[in-house]
Image 1 (cartoon, rainbow, N blue to C red):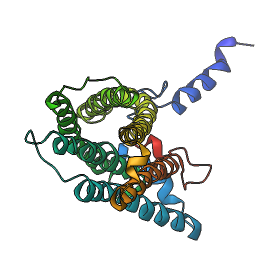
Image 2 (cartoon, one colour):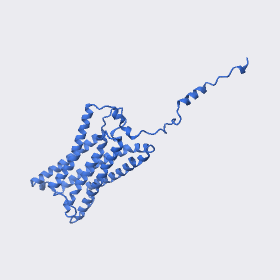
Image 3 (cartoon, rainbow, N blue to C red):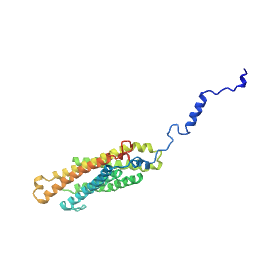
Image 4 (cartoon, rainbow, N blue to C red):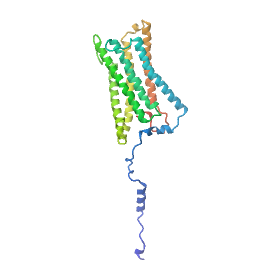
Length: 293
């Protein structure tokens, strides 16, 4: 038989190799060249899963309670200072200048920061970039409140006769730690989640790594602010003996107002923690509220 009359068959490995090559598109073998999904897709899982009546009830309850508590604690502080502490001043009266300290600290560290944290829970119909900008705006508004509140108490101690020492109590030390963490959080958040968006795809992994760290330390910073406010109320109560407070009707009412402020601070800590850590999405969803930063 002539071997040149029959063409040899190709080896069996060749078609398999060609088929495998056709199945794999060029440039997608490792999967690293595919761009990450944009931030707007973070809400897709929640939007695909319809809320039931219980989820809507929980959402509305958190919105109403958090708004009442965060605004109410500032209103109660203003009422306390205006009607029982003589109002406000700057440099003319040491005690009235000190009154700026609790009001501005509550406004910056509790009310504005609390709303800034809850934005990721409350503003579910806005685009993610808008929520980021609002989050930064509320924190930016809190900075001058904190700075002026710190300056007010610092100068009021210097104006005392004799001058009071600085940074001697637990309240002052907690305040320093809270302010330091607040500034650090703002700087890291500004550069990590706004400036790095100019090269979004290349910095996606870095930002996704920073998300749980930033969210966790933000909640810790808020809890430190609540603890600082409560220790400040305790320090204020210890400055005047209890027997003196109960001598007049106004002093007795002021005592109850201060205690009510402490209870409201505890309620705010509870509602903000529950709102941030709770998600209405089903168990199959992979994006949670604390990751939407």
